[in-house]
Length: 79
Image 1 (cartoon, rainbow, N blue to C red):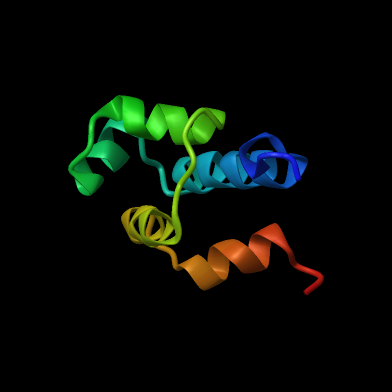
Image 2 (image 1 turned 45 degrees about the vertical axis):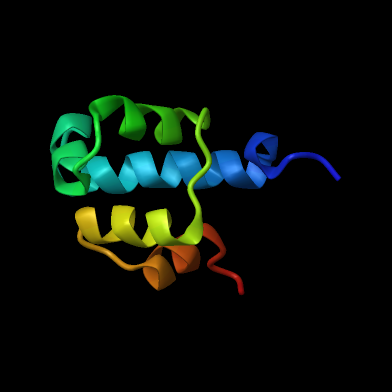
């Protein structure tokens, strides 16, 4: 089994998180401040260099003004 961080599906999640941030009108710095993390944290997960666990995904969703459920529904709208 390949590492999921390199999968096309995970790359779609990274792109979606970047899109959601932009839709919210936020910079990486602003999201990082909301997460109490350095800007590089946001940069790395958006670029697919860092994997988010489910708790971190929840925190990122909250910082972006959305939920994990809404993120997953946009990632897999057909499910």
